[in-house]
Length: 461
Image 1 (cartoon, rainbow, N blue to C red):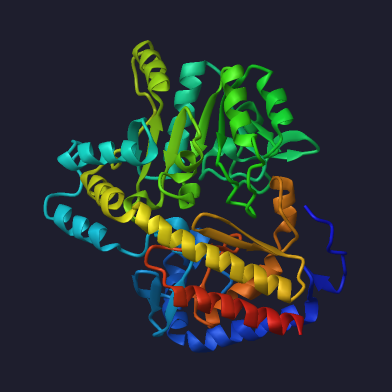
Image 2 (cartoon, rainbow, N blue to C red; image 1 turned 90 degrees about the vertical axis):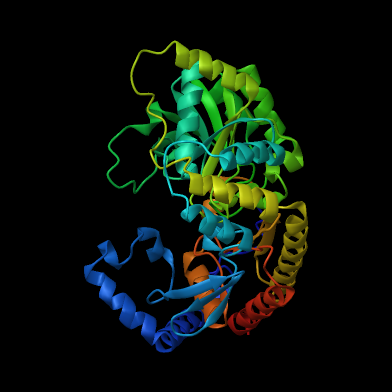
């Protein structure tokens, strides 16, 4: 990480504090005035939902109150106050291929007439499995409802086949609400992450934490012989984005094999990379592959697949276990509605042509954001992995989770989010993330770039 930005108590990430605070206050007032209908509606939720929202993550948006969505189509959201918004959040990846792609909507309508769940397979299930292997590689698949579940089940398999207790994760990672991954580094030691609500277990008995891009640290942890699996994204995405150093992912594969651990690749976010995700584009060879969120066009679905060798080892372990429940699976997973949407997405939506469009516009977006940052002499940078773009309010590139945590600037980011939204552009409330979908138009990208530049012009005048 570059040290080109000199600390200045009067500034945050190169922005004068007084200008930042003035912008934030003005934009909050503007939103409240223009979204009065949503405000009245949300007030009714205060006595219905815990903390006034149906999912507590919704509190992470920086608005004075949430807008209520009336409808969404393609890459556009319309709220009940009548505003049309260019959507670059896309449900935090869940709608990365656009809102309600027509083949998926058609599949939902057709399956709804035939039943929603019956814990039995369908012809769509068989075809979806074939398509999963065609798109992502030769794995033996299982279907879950969320990537959290898929990661949790993958860890159960890894422990079963290796007989080892621990998972190796990277500082700053996120793999859903998997307790085992909720650890961090403090003075070089693995500890429970601070702020874990209701967590009473000592997670250091289940996990060891290393820094991303540190192969020496990974080898030292694996050499102890108690690690069942390395669980990683190919690119760190749930912090400020961190790209793998050349040879790092290949090094993980080599070390996992050398020390008898499995390599689990979680592509829930990096599916943005290209057709087949980062694993296919870059020729990775995981023992277990996980993908979720947008894989069924926005319907809650995840898939996890075992390599042929890992599947054989799992089947042996499963055949030799004591009688009783395996502890893996949920009743509503692998339902026919999921398979109908999987089949439609994999065959008609998640296509190489769609990725070409997404990649082209994402390249345009990251170049436009970078040009604005340079023009305003800010110590920031923009970065992307395929269709996923971020601007980071710190110099770059970042090399690990510790640097990513320091790069996060909540006050700056919240003000920018509000200003962009008031000008018709919605980005994710986490890490300044922006996604390009097959439905995203060039004019929407250009509008976001122009709006970003307009706000920076005011902040740096």
